[in-house]
Image (tube, rainbow, N blue to C red; front, side, top):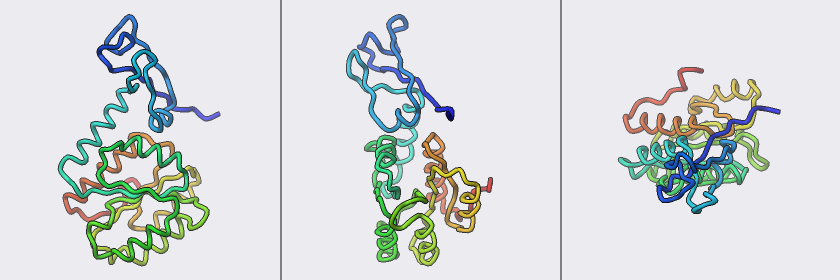
Length: 212
């Protein structure tokens, strides 16, 4: 059985006897990282949301990402509804323009039809490869034909359960794909958002990740 990364969550309500602020009566719970990211856990004493230092840092990261830019947007394309919910928990209400799709075809059509409209083009697309109708590879091939005509650069990150090195090598043929991120999500996910938005805001030419 593969090792599952776990984190410790605490209650941060100062008025609760079971909170992290009470050395003697503090209660904690260890849960898999993906569980902590995909659902809300509550204190059995006061009902407050349980958090870990990691999740608190993630929230701070998100607030820092959006504080200066009202136009940042991200599109998630994945046929796994649980993955959608995971991302929504991570982003909470702090991401100003996040859209979720089970199928890449409507995303491609929207990009094609709105390629001259800055506000309609996402900064980043997170794309799964294995989907039943149009898969991620088909989307990448179609996107290859239009990405140079888009009014602004779009960075694509592959989000996949695949551990096949052939897949990771294959995506390198697409210059707009910036990285291959394996599920489950970790802080690497937010790090990639932060990195790419910093590049966009500085108008730096987008290039494949240097570690490829």
